[in-house]
Amino acid sequence: MGHSLRAAALLAFVVLSVLVSLLITSVKQFGSGSTRFSNATDEEELAALRRALDLQLRERRKEILPLLQPYDENKDGVLKEVHHFSELDQNSVLDFSLWNEVTLGSGKAHRDRMGCESLMDVRAVEVLGSGYTKLVVKANLAGGQPVALKLVNEQGIDMSKCVEDFKDPQGCRELVSYKLQKEMLLLQRLRHPNVIKLKGHCSGVQGGGGVEKGRVTVILEQGTPLQMIQLLQTPWEDRFRVCLDLVRLLHFLSQSPLGSVGLLDFQPRQFVTVSGQLKLTDLDDISAEETACRTDADCTLQFLHRNFTLPCSSRGVCEDLNEKRNIYNAYRFFFTYLLPHQAPPGLTHLVDHIMNTTGELKANINQTLEAFEQILLLYKSGLHLDNLHPSILRDYTVMRDMSTSGNVEYRCWPSYSQQGCLLSVHNAREAAYICNSHSQCNSFTLTGQKTWTGRFLASFRSSFGHLVPDGASEVYVKKSKVPQPPSS
Ligand SMILES: Nc1ncnc2c1ncn2[C@@H]1O[C@H](COP(=O)(O)OP(=O)(O)OP(=O)(O)O)[C@@H](O)[C@H]1O
Ligand SMILES: *[C@@H]1O[C@H](CO)[C@@H](O)[C@H](O)[C@H]1NC(C)=O
Ligand SMILES: *[C@@H]1O[C@H](CO)[C@@H](O)[C@H](O)[C@H]1NC(C)=O
Ligand SMILES: *[C@@H]1O[C@H](CO)[C@@H](O)[C@H](O)[C@H]1NC(C)=O
Ligand SMILES: *[C@@H]1O[C@H](CO)[C@@H](O)[C@H](O)[C@H]1NC(C)=O
Image (cartoon, rainbow, N blue to C red):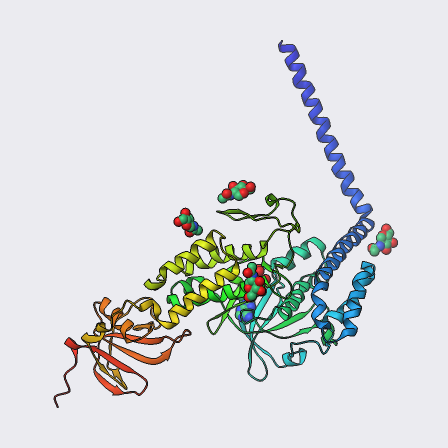
């Protein structure tokens, strides 16, 4: 027993030693081999990498080709050429210089006007944002016009991953810049008040001279990155506006010139605001494709907390898949955070209805837009305040063409002003209702200023020093608190 055990241990030891020595020699051989043949294998490897990168470059170009059509609308010569290209063998279709001429040549059909010359004397002020692919900087053009410039993000994940894979910074810059060019073409075709405005571009080829291929600068209208945390602290009226703008955008996208467009990377950071208006700025990840299907089971939309199955149409495509995906994303990233909280009491049932129909995908985008526009209409017209009786103003003395000074402010939330309590109201009745519900409130002033919906800004106070003439505003004071005229 003990003998055979020892024999087994010895055998194991021998086998192990042989294995280890084999391993060491193979490592040595591998090492020497790789030095001996280094330049041959390196070259082969580099050539293979280059081929793989070329393949990707071709794929990207192919993706962009269908977007080129609008250039040709008024130039029928080019239109024929493009159709002609797409029927040719791919390698010649995607011939580099030809392709670049089509995409980047400064044809008359370009609707964006600014070119490289407008960037001659540009001052970059600060970085507005950056992501996997792009870097956006705030800049003032020579004439002082503020713009946002979008460039390839050299430090971004897209770029560094490509360089790691292909070891070719120049080729990678070109590859990544196709995303920027695709976005630019999409911005040209998807013009809408809720899509960031393309003002022009400058690309290496067009710029000629010392500008490298793959260097593209897109000139955009300047916005403010959407800050969800800040937005959560703004009045309902402003949060509703963001949601309404989003729904208007999705309505447009559902029947855009490119067909029904789905936003694949749907996040607040793909949006900015320009004077309070929501605008989509990141378009490099959208789909205008329809999903082919044989049964309904092929048409599932999967989200973290919900799955949906959509019908497979008789044409063999998933019906409204892009539209429905957009709606649910709007619900989960925007509506749930922005819409219900502090909705005006007379509108909560309509808001709840929207939350339910979008959260359950029971309404299409047309119906959703209708529901939003109805809320806007009611809100603007003040019809939701019908239950506020005019007698509510009986407790107040009104002083027209007056405003106040020497005010004692109190704060309320969410106020349009940090210092005091500044809220939007439809009329004096609504303001009186609000004042009655604030224990500190003894007077309010209807100012001449209006919000985006046309409602008045009203300032609520606990007291004030004296009245001053102001043709644009009216002061309402609780009768019990009317200040006595100065005695001296
Ligand atoms: N016109 C603009 N005005 C102001 N800021 C902008 C503008 N366009 C983009 N930004 C900001 O720059 C950021 C990056 O832009 P963009 O989303 O296009 O890059 P990206 O690399 O595709 O980002 P991501 O990795 O998030 O997809 C945006 O999140 C936004 O905050
Ligand atoms: C590869 O190695 C050979 C000799 O081993 C040498 O003559 C040749 O110049 C090398 N090529 C490169 C590109 O280094
Ligand atoms: C959604 O579907 C996936 C795949 O069928 C499944 O794993 C997941 O649990 C489902 N999620 C929900 C919330 O139903
Ligand atoms: C919609 O309403 C139904 C019935 O009241 C409820 O069961 C469901 O949870 C609601 N869905 C959402 C997303 O609010
Ligand atoms: C949605 O509205 C548009 C017009 O705004 C109309 O062309 C389209 O047919 C409508 N779609 C549905 C499904 O009702």
